[in-house]
Image (tube, rainbow, N blue to C red; front, side):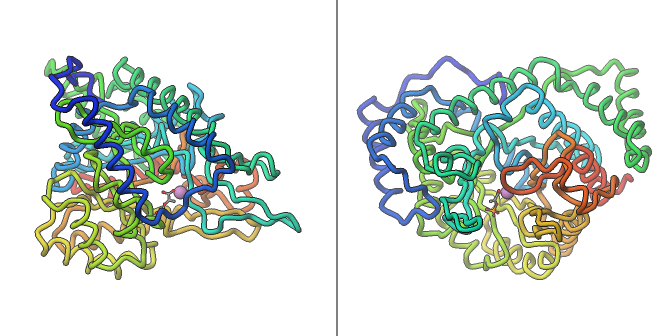
Length: 466
Ligand code: PEP
Ligand code: CO
């Protein structure tokens, strides 16, 4: 979110009436397609009122910022940059606090410094934040004992508590999501441009991690190298503006059409529609059907977009998605986020890479080592093993090395807090430990130490240096 975006609006290339027509046409085209995983709102009028209210709210991001991110993702696709995308599986309204937002941002920034040093390329920082409030669920209902209620679909739709009032979809939540996202984005913007993200400060947090956590000591050599590089630059008198601020972008799954469609606006500069709820939106594993409503939506917005590819994805699926979403082969327009599972990535990824590369497409390839590695612990928690997460990343890198393609980044569910949701890591969290601080409303996240550890371990995989 570069503050250098020119805020003086260029003369509009479209009239207000043309904008309205364009958005109506877009909405009609999206809703003419089958839309999976949408809630059944109980009151159609109330839902329409919420949508109308959203449509009058100011955009959360500017089109020019989205273009800026697309250019950066173009570098990722060409092998000249690395993407780090991270945040909660499901954001919550209660989680919109300064402490929680700061801790998550801090964790992503710390990981990015380590990855950037090891990869020797810029790291594009993208939060799963400020809009990640809707979840696809394997079943529309949840049964406990003899009570069956609608499943929890994210706080954009209903409440987590297992009672009828909470679980009934409530469209007034749509504007609450907008407000929560605006507040989150506002703080993120303040942090990243106001000095909090200064490279030397971020490095000093990493130094603390290495010095003060038992697990950090393994990474002393790498932290020491970064320290020396920074000291060297200091003694040379190098103190660029880039040390003090960072560009940080936001993203979420574009799942809930009643939120994304009203947030879509026509850019006055170009006449193109942008989803102004985030810089990048992605289409998830369960809604990526090339002829479905979600891909239709993604095909019609000018933001950079991503699509998750799970273990059932074929090379032909990927090629069809490229045709639908990036027919002009614009670098940075389309990123594939691959989530095959640690055991499958080495078998399933190579044919995708080979056929997509042979087609001449220029897409980014990012590894989501979380969503293919879930299991239920003996004591009943949905969890993931740190070692499986790392193993999928390792497989992803190996496959790219073998095919001569660029492993463009990581997509991670993480928090800056010391939760106990994933097992393993240097603190050796066990299944019994999960009970002590299991807070996620959806998938288990890496905690702060596990996230930093992942960054250092990936740095070891990446770097000839370490
Ligand atoms: C997610 O990212 O939280 C998610 C639901 O992922 P996927 O679509 O890959 O299952
Ligand atoms: Co998830």
